[in-house]
Image 1 (cartoon, rainbow, N blue to C red):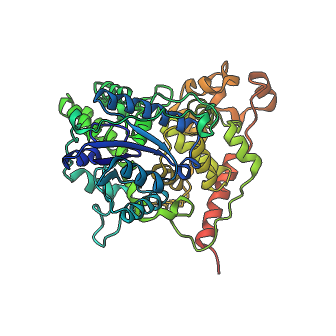
Image 2: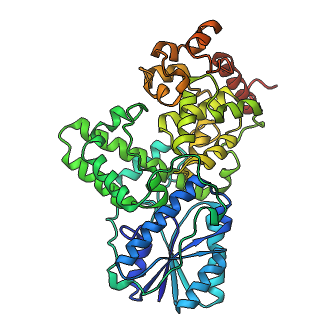
Image 3: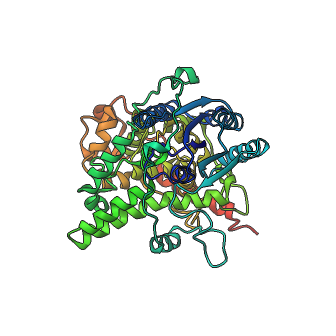
Length: 469
């Protein structure tokens, strides 16, 4: 027997670790571990997605005459126990790149070694493993454009085949526990459906048409020209090689140069996930520490009332509040708006990026440690390519440019449901009496953007040591 330990690879197709297990020519015992050390960093909406994906994966194994064994407990105890109970000589899993995951895996390796069980980890969730795309001096890139240039020229592996039904062991698993049994409340948000079928349908639908409009439409949240694949990339209900191959076929079918460029832009956005995975693999401390050093400490304001207003979508900046309310309702937020609300928290409210990252970690169904840490540090000018510390999004300008008719705002900010686009985007300039007439329940702006922008620049200049004797 050989155990394949699933983690964030909840699929049987294009799963390199599972394919490696099948190549060893022993029956495969599929396993997933609900590890309390990992679960304590989770949230209801994310665990709801996980349990749905596990039930779907179990049904696939049962179609093959096998089953998915789902166990609760520390992985360093559960994995060796399952290997011993099944008489397995080896355990295979796919690599994860966070510090927490690597610490867990070291403990599992040590426990298996004590039992005389071999183990092997496989790079699966990204195309090119950390350390394979580097500057001339080695280590890793800290500027995305350089990474992308090398990434796109590297040969890509083909999707891994699904093992045959005869490759799987005849096993029987216990009932998958519920949210309540794992100690989680029902999520406040409506979770996206995270199954293999939905992932495949989304890929096929997106690559049949919307991908050719992606470059033009991706920044407009009201029409949402994005793929909505991020929860599937997070949980691995779609494989990275499978997704890339689908985009390559779309590029081959493209009828115009603009269509092909739009496909390339979508691929480029996917590669940000891989770039941040490389950064995190070399810098696991960046989950809690700034990636870029400053001469002095950044003097974050960290006003608790302003942070709570931001979380609740009650800042008086309509497109910011729309994004934060979408997050609470859906466990998801449009990417353009993610950048905007992150900039608003760190530059307008002068609040430490870690407070925003922690809130996103609790609320997002698609939370990915590497991707979210990278995005938050980019917005907070503490991460990769942090030189433009003066990068401050103007929320009013962003609203007018990317939600010109106010559709997105009106969808999520009900108080402004009857407001015109000019009233929405000019909310900060309206007199109090006008705001009370248009939307008496919606707050006035809690800060003055121009003032906070200047204060943010001064804050980072002090941190950089500029102007000091």
